[in-house]
Image (cartoon, rainbow, N blue to C red):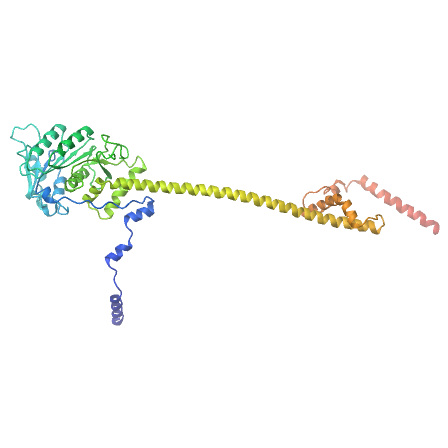
Length: 462
């Protein structure tokens, strides 16, 4: 037993263990499996989007127009900014995350709970408001923006939006501004906002989206992102491009907050107005492209930030175009195959018709030879009978030539008779009723008379 175990251990030690890279190289990627299984192969994703340096957005950030509702805590945005897994926000680099609210006491009760204490969020969480300052709107003043490097504003009303942008531009501390506007904001407002921010020194991203949908888990909803003004804005229906100012489909609140947070950290999002739209997958087949593409990115190890950056860079449009080209190519190949098959069938039908005609000619020739053979044999017998009975002085060749038409008729009858098919005179013998006594007597009467005459001639001799 010990000897067997020793041999097994030696054999195991001698067999090389495949490395992780070797095993990984043998496993097909998601994109290759998608190409084989669904015939909707995609182009390789664009190079992964690079992130901003944290110094350009931190260490202090202000959250505007969240944490004011009594129905929810809005803690998601704070957890995202305080995440230890985010490539930019990791290790809790924000020293101060400020919630600008209307009622600081109520907001503190909703946000500072067990989870905030366990994750350390409560150590960097701060609250500011216009309470007691005589302000009539929930917009941070220039003084409230002191020492704030970045501002995130979630769906402010249009009147507050103008004041917020003006105060951020006037502040010497604010260097980054990210705004999300829901319910399909008009293109005129977006263009005006972009023009105002372009003339400032602030790095900005404006996100236009549709209605905010509650109770949709982050990462479960397919979506599109398109840069405003590039002709691929997300429209109604399937979410395909339909130009600026069109209605945008709804997006889940958590997904919108995630995209908003990632745009804060992406270089590719800086200075852009983008449209974030959900996808109506039930309307047509094109709606499946976003889900397929997002699955591909995530299966290849893309982070959520790299995923958002790829969509802003137009990766999904390239995917959809390549997918449509593959589908068109497949349909063309199927149509060509059907055309070739029809041509082959036409050629086969012509060949079959030629073979049938050839067979018919060969059969007729075979029948003619059989008839001529029987005709020659019949006429040869008839000639011999007449020649030896001295009823003809013709030669055999002359007799056959003279009577060939009649011989062919007889040959045809003989061939049909041997084959068992109908022929002229086939049933003539059946026309005689062998049970008709009168006919029998008439047939037998000449025989009897002949016999009687024969007997009469024999009697005189006797």
